[in-house]
Image 1 (cartoon, one colour):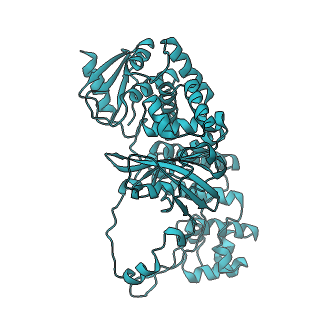
Image 2 (cartoon, rainbow, N blue to C red; image 1 turned 60 degrees about the horizontal axis):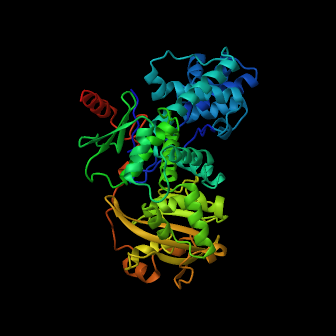
Image 3 (tube, rainbow, N blue to C red; image 1 turned 180 degrees about the vertical axis):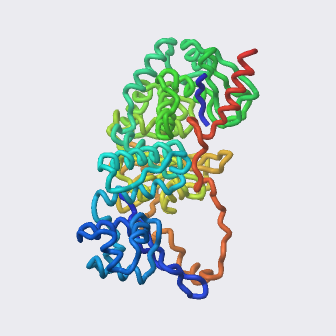
Length: 504
């Protein structure tokens, strides 16, 4: 049963800085015994010494030195000094950051893996790491461990993995100017098949599309809480919720469910695959709600009149402002030659969704991820929250280090809070847009902290050192996304739901 729903480098530093307690006393430095042992062995063999020879030189039993070389015993400082003297190196070289050879690096990594919790959880016997182990075997064992960790990381969908997947997908979208010709063609073919004549896509036509593909629609009141829709591929049914539980356009929810089928999606293999499928089905639904030919014709006429406006696009096709803004990014560059950027920003200032191909300097972390980053207070997407007129779009020019951008934005309220939705374009393209005559203007020097991250001097003088806020802990940011092929979806609940309704 299938268902669709929405909802190294090695670190080898061997000597660590001593830690401090409150009383100022320092603990003993910690030695990376695995790295140290392999380095001692390498230096001993380079000197042509046996364990007996080295034992005689430092006054220790060969068996004790063997434990040190195998990373099973930590030598005291006096022994380290004796070893360094016998091997003709200083302590710093014994505790160097780099393994002495490629083989030593592999041995160190394999030994660490075998002592770690992941290897222990596999219940496998440990491989004795010795000079008799060939390089091919070492490379293979370490490579297998890397691949196992990579796959487990992908399945876990940690925040880091989610950011990486988002960054890669946004790069793909940028390379295509967010325009997918194959999805456009599939949407157009489906509209033609049901005899769609133009205008806003009605609920009736959306249902016709599903039925044309062989699906019956079932409206239920007990849809699993973690889903927007459930598709029963065994019985060709699409289950949708009754009433107003969902904040999403019912047409869009249905068309996204249809999109998984039309686009031939299989159960996601990892979070990146899940995210890509979701973006593609959103695109597919928008291409049905706002067909390419009709939407481009509308935009071209508006551009010729120098009256481009997202709210007009929204009203012409009876969709949400967010859908209209997304659709604009799909078509503006490819058909109108206008680069642009899109933002969905929470009232707290955190980016929820973003896209850009116009060179705007979105805030990003070291991985290139934009989602989850705070937006400059001076940008339109933040300034719009303070505008009293919520009926009309707010327009503003913003001078940034990447150039001047004109942006138009509105705010919308959802169960998770208030969000701004904004479309921006470089200054040279503003001549095509209504609202270009705005006198609102701001300057952003971010990421310079003096722009908006640092409190004004007068406020700081009054309150620095006299305020202690209790932060709202976003603990979900520290946790992995819920496990499973469809993150956040309770598969037992879904299967039980399908089983119950299959009998009806």
